[in-house]
Length: 294
Image (cartoon, rainbow, N blue to C red; front, side, top):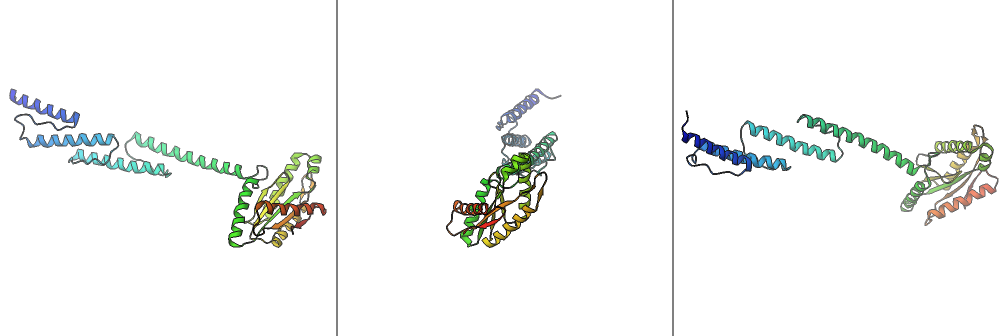
């Protein structure tokens, strides 16, 4: 049996331990236990453990842990895992959705599920962005570039032509008697003519050329690096291909072309105006022909 003095000393020691665990403050050893090295070391470890766990709970993984033994090893493993988790979370925030967690049980499942959902969301957003970009830059009916996007490309190519002294050609084409097609066969047939003509033009131009639907039945082609002679030859091939095609329910449909080449100091509006002038000459000259601007 223990004596009353031993019981009192034990109770005093437990009180000191409780105080240290609850507050993290190292309490003074009670009388009679001042020289107890093991108790002194235990209190130091408990105070350090309190400071460490408090820091970790606040997100501070820099708090040192001087504790030794199996508990210290487990806590240091946890610290390392949390540091790696922090790094993984930063990688996910940066767009790396390959990260996976394989510790902490349910947390791992939740984290990995979150990353998979984020990856799916990113894939969907990227797909939506492609669709929105296409809607913003292309003509919905023919798939050719729209006028706004073509103007942007023209401005960029004009600046490049000025900088490097490269030629730049442009031509506009207009379907002949297109109103008659709509009035005779209906707008659905007219739309199909536009779609088919756009396909013919796309198949005939170079990979470096750009095709846009300029207006109702007008298309425009920009040819970087092409001279007016080269562009006129290309326009003639396209004119012949368009005239040779037999449209379903409509038959033959022709188009007129106006071709020009960029002049030094010329603005986009001036370039288009000269091509348009050549187009009107082609119309006045009998249609189904190519005219080159002077």
